[in-house]
Each structure stands twice: as C-alpha cells, then as structure tokens.
Image (cartoon, rainbow, N blue to C red; front, side, top):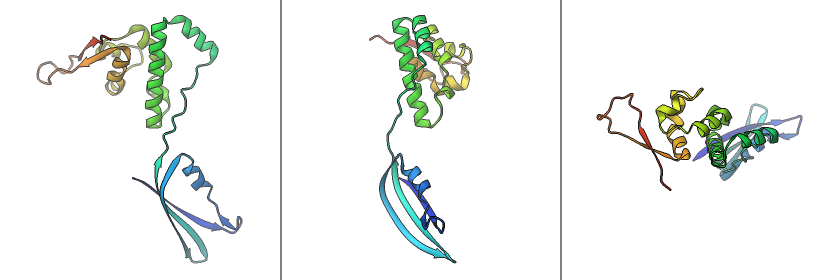
Length: 173
C-alpha cells in the first residue's frame, strides 16, 4: 500500500488552496482511497489529504535513435545482431524505467553493440568487454546472457573456486 499525506495552507493571494503539487503527484497515480480534513492553526486554515494510491503502469516507449545513427548502426550489424540489439535496448529501457534511472546507467549503446558483436558466452567473458565491470556483470549479466541466447549454469558452492565463472551454454530453440 502506498500512502502520501499532503497538507496545504490556505493562500490569501489565491483565495484558496494551491493544489499544484497535489495535481502533479496524482498525474501518474491511481487513487484507491482519499481522506480529507480541514483544520486551523493560529490564523491559517489548512487542508490535509491522506491518499492511498498505486502507480499507473505507464511505460514510455523506447527512445528512438536518431535516424542517421540508426542507419549507420543498422548497416554495421547483421539482421540477427540487429534483432538482439533491439531486444537488449527494450530490456534495458524497461529495467531503467522500473528503477527510475536513465537507461545508460545500466549499459550505454556502445556496450550493447559490443555485447551483440562479441556475444560473450559467460559472465567472465562479459567482464572483458571495455566498460563493463564486475558490478554490472553481477547485476545484469545473467539477464543479458539469456537475451543473447545463453543460459547460466550455477555450480554448487563447494564444487569450484569462487573465481571460477559459471559456465554458459547456448539455448537450442
């Protein structure tokens, strides 16, 4: 349950309550319940609202690459690589949107291009790509390998040294 409380003072200038912050907040929310109270403190009247809400599932579309860049990139990738690149961009966009961060924080476009062209088959190989570090591999590596068409096989903790990366095998479709 998501809950937000607003307390709005009466504005003499507006001769009412400035509800612009409330309206901005509600722009992408579905209100489940709302309770409203008025009170006065000293000479100022206040309006308090307790709002039970849930976020609307509004996922903006994946930002399009500029046409010139897209055309150059498209020409440098095979059809299969382009398809995987687009899947990676969609995955990155959805993940970034769900976390409220810009997509390039996860991987930038050059990282995605390198992933598509190199097609690392393991987390260890993924770490060798310029700009992709240990933390990124730990957070996103398995998802990327699945999109690239590989599955990560986890070994028992006691059967291999810690630095032995999990083996990956190509999916048969």
